[in-house]
Image (cartoon, rainbow, N blue to C red; front, top):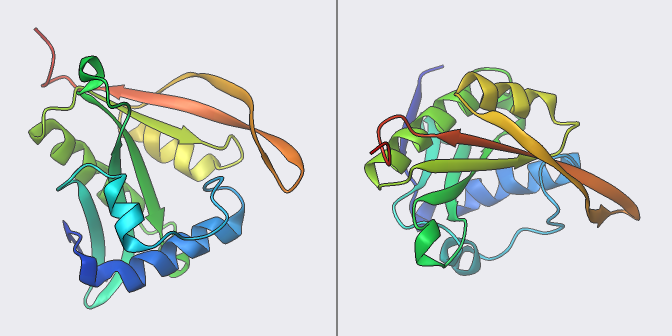
Length: 165
């Protein structure tokens, strides 16, 4: 397996949305219950900061940055999301994607990345920590899923290159 990370385009949406649906089905990736259409999904992301990890013509995973807020003061803060296809989990694809997102975020002027992860998603938490994220806190009973309240762990990574003055 040779993974190549590249910028995501609209033509990738079929495979990307299938991986997103797999993540939704786990019950430990997102509060979303269905995959949105491409236009709605893309409009909520930072332009140029959506990527895919490819194994030949197969997309093994995807990552994207979403703005933290529309307020100017938070212009350097984004939320990182990484999803890996079922057949590629545990193979380093998520780490490659998160590393590439960190690089792209700094090139785009972001000084802080956040990740919101269900506490049960231990693999994602470990991956984030390996890439320099730290636990900031727990958002208790943030949302309901299948009738049960769910907590969300908030992690952040502060750039050592951007916003250090």
